Amino acid sequence: MNILKNLIFIITAIFIFSCSNKKEQVHFHEFKEHAWDADEVISIPLQIDDTSKTYEINGVIKYNSLFSFSNLSFNISILSPSGSSRFKSLNLNMKEKKDSIAEKNNLEMPFSVYKTIRFNENGTWILNMTHQMPVDINNGLENLEIRFKSI
Image (tube, rainbow, N blue to C red):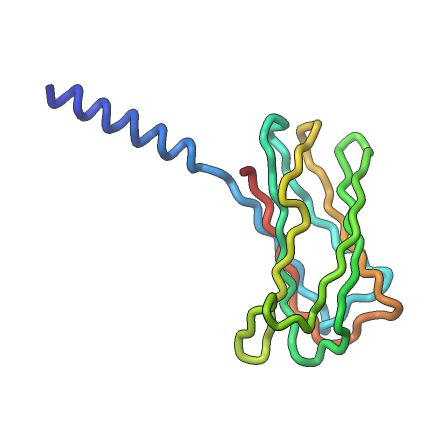
């Protein structure tokens, strides 16, 4: 009887662990000298191992009080291993205090790239980001974090 209870416990634990084991890929980009030049492309690899899953992509931009723009507009393209692409534009209201999280003199602006997205082929996809501001961003940016996981 003890063996049966232990076996049921082990099977249940394996089932719970396997259902909650959603690998999250986290990528960081440090802005050198707190700047993002207009021609700088931020490239982030996304590894797709299962095309039957749905994924989400979220980000956080960390910046400080020297960031002088009220908005940050940028384009995102996702390139497949075979060369097809998806394109999206985002515009963040950087002075919107209710969305940003203050930590000392640094601010964080969370944003969603895709709440749900599916991929049609396995392999390494590339997420490219370029800002669409009228000039180079020379001050205030700390880093960018992109989180990618199956849901």
